[in-house]
Length: 179
Image (cartoon, rainbow, N blue to C red; front, side, top):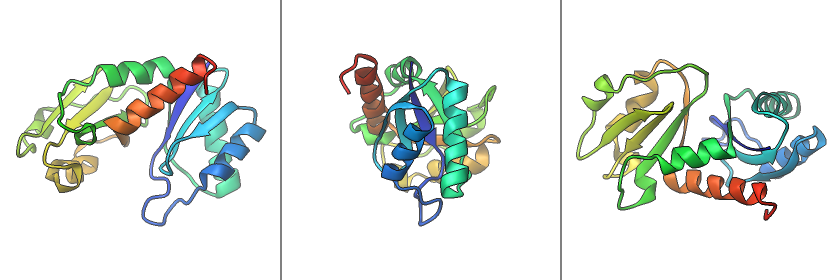
């Protein structure tokens, strides 16, 4: 099966440095098949027997080979593709939409209090276990985006729609044997 693994807080601000070439090699040595990464922020597309095994292999490799502890979210290729396809906004720029993935199972986010923090056309939607944030004024200028980690009780890892779409495309290509 094909999986997409998202690492939280990797290669950000000089902390939790994990070179992607070394990570790919470590994961391949540990038995994951056709390991690919996308950009430097901890995005992995790989083959594996099941999500729990892939998550465990990645977590162990990070700890043992890089001395890094990171929240690890592993999704099937189909689940990521569905999340991208279900995003509820029509942005002018895909970088204006962020998909937040819970780092723990069973998380529910009540968006009522988040909506009250929205400004300048922003919106936030929780559906099918994903928090979608639309920031038409720019993610970096969004007060809600800055506050979000404090307003949600569970850790989340986010990817903009461009990155999520690219990862879904890579996973789809790997599933078809084209990657």
